[in-house]
Image (cartoon, rainbow over all chains, first blue to last red; front, side, top):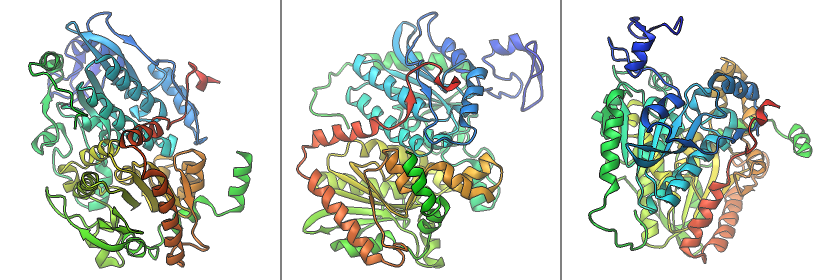
Length: 270
Length: 282
């Protein structure tokens, strides 16, 4: 990436005009590589103009373990992304349908989940349960945040429990898994979506490919842990290219918005 | 806080405890089950794919109370370890545990879970069959299970592979157990590109029982007689039994709705953050 006028595809080396590239949803027109995009761009891509209102922006990470280099990393990420933490949460509308939206920011310590990310997701899910909003989560993450140790791990339990509360109110969560979705994030709320959508070509898994290769000591098959591989193994509902994502979400939101057969509330769901 | 640091200097280093937690002579889940339960019947399989020997479990009596008990099972020798993948479970292991938990819920039995794993198995088959989904579903279901759950980290608490059977009303650790989001070696290789600095990483990760108690992630520490459980399995099992009995005594007469609410609140509170914009800039 040598200027804002041109951009070079990291996969096939094709040079694109930045403005065309942006118009093409940051997808290489030659090889189809989906580039990582920031949380605000995602939000603008999905939500109706000016409909999004963020919540819990003020939450900031501390350094509970006094972990080497952590505070500096946070500060650098804050400057680079202009965000306080690795997830943007709030409410908005898509084609007029109100939703609760969470978008992870890969530029912030690989959108790893520490206390703040876990808390913001939990608060978003609790809000959605209280106000009966469907949830859309655009996910990309390196997993649990090492620098907050065991507290990060516990965010997996916290967010998963919050999804269950959302389900008790019979509200759906659509998760969109982008490149890369790995580790503790995949193994908690990401795989708990009622409908799991994966972006074309996204790396999705629990263990990282390098760790697996080290363990088994042989070469990994082509396309291993890519979105299409997960689809083939029954782990995601649908794989879509980025340009069709919004359209798909609108369809799904509309389908879930009407309930032709009322729930006779008899205890809890599931 | 200052006191804790001073104490830590006097006591074993974090890496000493990591080594103790990994000691191959430490009692395994099956040892503890045999020492603690009467009339244990081992149950097998996830009814989906296979029986994962990295997690063993079944039903039995805990002092005349019927319970479901399971945990990661490390092998006793190389051959046994290969069969059991060194206690690293595949998705079918987590699904077996979930099946046993749902069965316990149906018949009103408390659940006791013992954690001792380096982590969930990282392999091609594990990914193909949905390792992440299996763990996620366990976290989800355990947060709503209508019977008491007691979890004890007896050796290594390795990340998501440990938590996958570790969401509970009471969580304890043996005094020489560890519980961490990443192994010290993995952390050192990310942080310093040098697995040789695992000891520094072990200290930085705050993975000992005392660290976790201080961070309010666990409810209590179960003591092992010096030099550790590997020398005194019977005494350690006795202490373990006492802790379980105490927790059951407390949890058994609780209303299921309230139990789940309190479990939610317990995990809801975990995490340390600031509600003030920009405190990290200080």
